[in-house]
Length: 152
Image 1 (tube, rainbow, N blue to C red):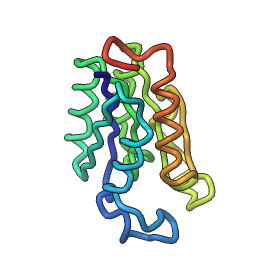
Image 2: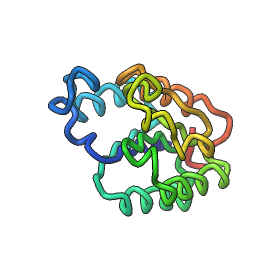
Image 3: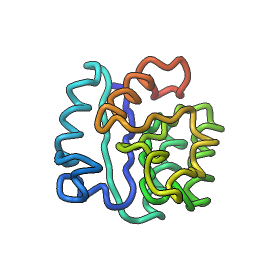
Image 4: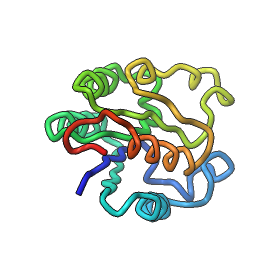
């Protein structure tokens, strides 16, 4: 079975109750169900969320070591975490796929959200489509020609 790692940064554990006008009313369990339903039978989706920057970085390091492609919603870390950016770069430099996703469109929001330090090292970016951003990213990762020995 192939694995896709879906990593989520700070405050995404509050989905469903945090700013539903921006992020919707569904929670991470609903996202997990959507991705599990959307994944082919031979693909396992490992969805994780943390408010801890160091934990997110460790998960990216493990993805490199285990040759697992990543879908990453860095959340607020998007805009300033060079440590996370460097860990994400390790993923793509290892020849693995890393898709940056966002539920909302950061460019349609506050000015400080317009800059991502992660985008330049990501394979691609999908934003503004709610949970469909993740579904589109999963479809890309599953159909990507690169991504490592454990990757689709």
